[in-house]
Length: 17
Image (tube, rainbow, N blue to C red; front, side, top):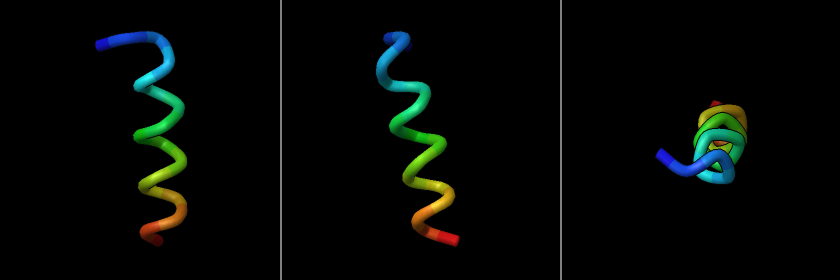
């Protein structure tokens, strides 16, 4: 996965929570 894709997924999980 791209280095930029990781933080995006983390933010998505946080926003989803």
